[in-house]
Image (cartoon, rainbow, N blue to C red; front, top):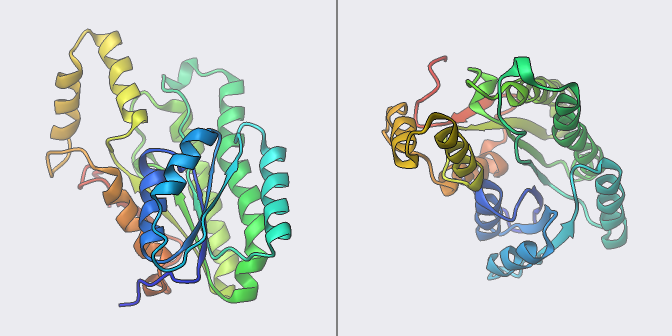
Amino acid sequence: MNLDLTGKNAVVCGSTQGIGRAIAIQLASMGANILLVARNEEKLKLVKNELDVSKGQKHHFLVVDFSIPPQLKLMLEDFIEINEINFHILINNTGGPAGGPIENARPEEFAQAFSNHLICNQILVQAVKEGMKADGYGRIINIISTSVKQPLNGLGVSNTVRGAVANWSKTMANELGQFGITVNNVLPGATDTVRLKSIIENKAQKTGESIETIQNQMANEVPLKRIAQPEEIANAVAFLASPAASYINGINVPVDGGRTKSL
């Protein structure tokens, strides 16, 4: 099975922590050159220094705020032009919107989440797809949520926007497949990240329950009886990014320990 990414160039968004960082580390270990994209320069530098260079990999980073889509477009297009580089792998990964019931969500919350996720994903794909077409190799992988299959309580805005991204992705897969470009979604379940810690803390404040109690409740909802580690999500992404996954296109892959009840 060919999992070698030597010579492949990958854009990994949201790569300073959690799932994004784990993905960048895994892809680099498989030989890929990584462009880290996030808004915190100091954290980007730290992650860049963690990436494997044993196969001569060259790694870079861009400091970009996804709440400013024109900045993302300009900086990525400039990087591609200046470095005369084609990207073969794109990992769309952005922190989700704040939680809360959908009935209380303000219209601007939907607009901002739609911009951060779907609009920025579209900008990124349009920036890299011609290089993928030219080289006959493309892997676009979107880190979304299991809410695509089963809406999650208390995440009204996120459920809505994640569903839109999943349908955008399926449409893109249908259009780009003929060029050797696959588009797939990875749907993490509860994963040990800063975002999950924040969700747990907020729930603890609202309910009066302890953080440990809420963590245990979440773990017990999973057939495997534990919360995922970021590296476990990264392993699924790495396979989809590899040559071995060349005929997998347009699918949603839950990586949730079996928590999602739908097929």
